Structures are given as structure tokens and as C-alpha cells.
Length: 556
Image (cartoon, rainbow, N blue to C red; front, top):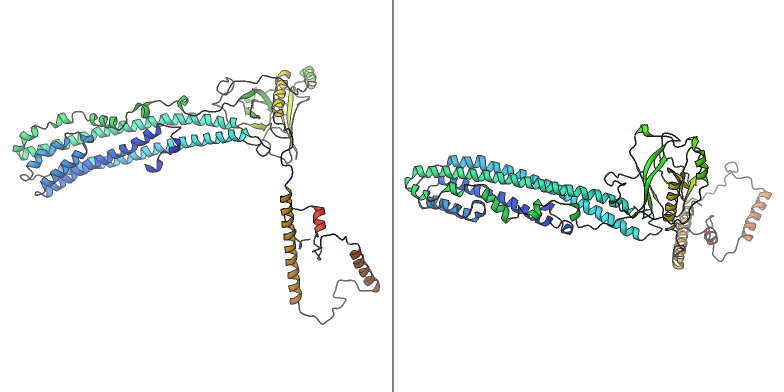
């Protein structure tokens, strides 16, 4: 049970979990105590059947053991064996049947039920700990996204919208509450089963004591008067009394710990309500035809994201929005002015207050567009097949993957998303709200710093020069070693074996002139040339620009 202990950092979220966790050791200890009592009885019966002379000592041990377990059997349970201790030297009886009954029934059943209860309790603890851990992780994720979104820079514009993490957290909280209530119900069922089993043990012990009493009374009539003073039937008349007392002492019947219904309102978590600027139904291009449009539920959040969720629609309800009988409206939509700074009242309703947005049925968004991107454009589109269409164009440096079946045209630098509204006014309102959100992310100036520091540039230059000089020295050393290792060839190779043209006077004169021209025309740079084999010198490096990678002179 210790490996599933409740972490201390979760006590702020689940303060009642500490009381719940404290009950489990006492519950398991009760099984251990029952085992101690029954083992004591078994040991007693074994010793009394084989060792007549040590019966008195065995009674004393049993008497002491029962005194330590008054919580199980009551305060007067140890007095049952007091009269028998006084006559232990006078009798010898067989307790084989009692011993067999104790071992075969009580001990075996106790161990089996103990294992089952321990497994059930551990299983329930694992499940509730998993639900609580997942809730804490979602809560940390949402808080991290909210903190990251508070400071918007050019490096974290493509972060996750905190509104999405808030939706996930809402789902997890509801799931966690269901798990909490289910956990309590199952644990209460386990406690009730334990109470029933506890009463069975009391009943069996009563039967054992009655049998023991019968044997003793039949063997020694002198003990009947003393045994009558101990009314066992009255002592164990109600077997449930002992477990009720145990439950009261160890808070098993506590209302706050086990019987109070858990509600979402009682959960100590203050969530930030992200405002929805605008919400409504739009249409995106369908994958089944050029004139077909699929309805989506569009949500524009105050964090600068446009999310589109698919709406359930039957295939027979797909219809054509590009009919030609709306030509007049199409002309009016094409000339619709582009709003620059509209004064629209954003929606002040939160997620839980909006009747048109179902939090329970929210899944993954089909399209999520970040309006904080640096190059984004929104304008209406004139189409012959459809009316009231506008598009969102995102200019990127690199191509990005577009959602499948989104009908978004793209190339290496442009990604387009097309949307259709029900009328011109709805289209104008959407364009105005989107442009207003885009204006919130327009920077006031270039980022600082714009260039690297001079010290950093000097360090890069020194590192590059050092690497190039080291590579050049390595190449020269290898060439010198190769030349030294070559054997001296005293024979002059024939001109037929070489691939060079014959050395005529014209060729020799031409080669000399080319070497002289190269020497005379060489640019005398203040930096020495360290690449006699055709490598780059410092002037070439400054003209071509330094790179962070060293130049490989062997490849050049």
C-alpha cells in the first residue's frame, strides 16, 4: 500500500485525501489483528491437545493476547478463559475438531479475503491516483500555457492556445469528479463487505467458544457454575456492534471523508476564463465537390486564435451555395469595403455561459489559425460559384503542411484558407473582428538587438581563421611526408607514358608567361596567403563572408 501513497503536493487540491489515505493502514491492520487472534486460538488448541502440563501457560498467553485486542472482541472477551486457567491441571481434552475448524474455515477464509480486499483497495487507489495525477498535469500544462501567452515574442508565436488546454482541463475535471465519486462508492462497498465478513468471524468465534464450552462442561461438571457467570450469547449477541465501534474510532463512517458527494464547485482551482471575441457558423470548402461547403463552428478567442470545429451533418443535407440566381448579391459582395478599424462589441460571455457552444462535445479542432503570425492577410473573394466568401492568406518562408481535405491552396510561401458566410453582413463582421485581432500583434519596431555584438563577431572570426590555418598546416605536413616517402626515380619517363603535351618552346614560354602574369596580377592584400594549393586566403573569406563552419581546403 505504501507505493501508492498520496503525494504531499496534492493536498491543496484534494484536502480530504489525507484522511482517506490514513484509513487504509487501519483497515489492513484489522486483518492482521484478526489473524493474530485466530492464530492464538489455533496455537492454544494445539498445545492443549498435546501438552497437558503446559495448559496453564497457554491459557495465560491467550488471556494476554485477547486483552491486547479489546478493539476486536470487546473489553470482557479475555475473561472468558479465566475460569479455565484455574482448572488447567485437572483436565485433558481433545481440541482437534476445534483446531481443524479454525484452520480450515476461519484462517483460510481470512487470508483469502484479505488478499482480495488488499487487491481491490490497491486497484482503487491506483485508479484515483491516476485521475488525480492527470488532473494535476493538465492544470500545470494550462498554467504554463497561460504564462507563456502573457509574454508574446517572435520566438513563441506558434504556442498552443490556452483556450484549448482549458477545454481539456474542463473535461479532465469532470472525469476526475466522476472518478472520485466512483472511488468513494467502491470503497464504501468494500467497507460494507468487510463489516459482513467481520460479523461472520464473530459468529464463527462464537461457535468455537460454544463448542469449547460444551467440551469443557461435559468433561468437568465442576466448571459449569463458573461458566454460567460468563454469558457468551449476550456478549456476542450483535456481531455488527464491534465493527461499528471500530468504524467510529478510525473514521470509516466519516461524512467528510467517505460520504460527502464531490462536486466540481468544491474543487479548489481558480481557472482563468478566456474570452470568446466572436463565434458563429461558417462554411469551409468540402472535399466532395467544388460547389460543396461543409459547415463549421468558428470560434475567435481573445488570445489571437481562430478555431474551426466540424458540425455533425448528414450527407443528404449537403447543398450547393454557388447557384447562379444570386448574381446581384454576388456583385454587392465583391464591392464590399474592407473594414480597417471596426468598433464591434466583443462577446463577453464565457465558455460555460454560451448556449451555442457545447463544451461537452468539443473535440480536436479541424483548423486552428494563429493571427499573431507576422505576414497574414484577410480579404473578400469574388467567385462565380459561391457568394460571401473571404480568405485568410498566410505568407511563410517555408511551406507548412495543410490540414487534409481543407481545399486550402498553397505553395512554397503561401497558405490560403477559404471561408463562406451566410450573408454579406456576417462576412463583414468576421473580417472586421479578424483584422482587429491582427492589429493587436503588429509590432511597434524591430526586435532588439538587431545584429550580433562586435565581440561575438570577433570571436567567430578568430575561431574561423584558427581552424583554417590548422587545416592548412595539416595538409602541408601530409604532403611533405608523402614526398619524403616516395622513392627516387632515376629513370626519365617517356613522353608516351604521360598525358601532358610535348614541351615545345612555345609551351614552355606560355607556361612561364602565365606564372609571371599570375604573380604580377596577384592582389597584395594585407593578409598573407596561406593556401598555395588553391585554398582560400583571408581576402576571399572577407569577400565571401565568414561562415560558422570551417573551410575544407582539401575539397577546394
